[in-house]
Image (cartoon, rainbow, N blue to C red; front, top):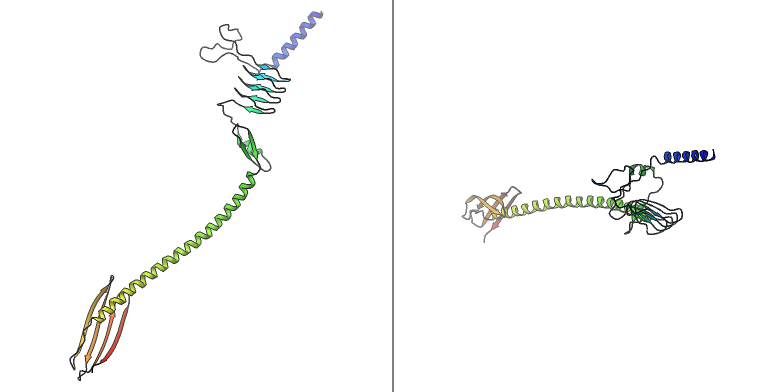
Length: 263
């Protein structure tokens, strides 16, 4: 009866273990087309995997050739190594380098965080800038955020200054355009005035006593043209000559008169 009861107790415990382990499966066989299925049978032609080693106090090692030698350490993954106290190595080839470290993946592996949007939504308080050193250690820098805020303020002030300067430059450009137009107009008017003077200067006049003359003249200067007309009369005594003239160009018009005494 005692033996029977002991056997029943063992059977119950085994059943309980089977229930607890029904979602745990470990396959230590190699993968590939020639690898046999994980059928629970022995495969003597295959090299046995390197066993996991958990030698640290309360250490856990899972995976072929995984080593958890630090106290309270954990190594999960093929070749994962946690040799320092309270260190955790997760992923194939992950190797910790200091106590209390959590190392994700080994050389050539990548780390992906699922649903980062939900993590961002769950954040509260002031956010900081995450930093990563050459060895892959993650940290945060509390000085960058204030500097970014200060720089944003300075950039905003600079943008406002630039807007004001651009407005001022636009005003100067507009005034320069107006000044250029005025200078061009004055230049054409000056050239036209010279052309008018030349046209008037070339008007012939009466010089015989008692005779009158109506005359016309044309002249051009620096792209501007002008015409002139005149009237002159010599008195009977031949000593007094009177003269009047006028000129016209697209830019301006002029008129003049004169009297001369000959003796």
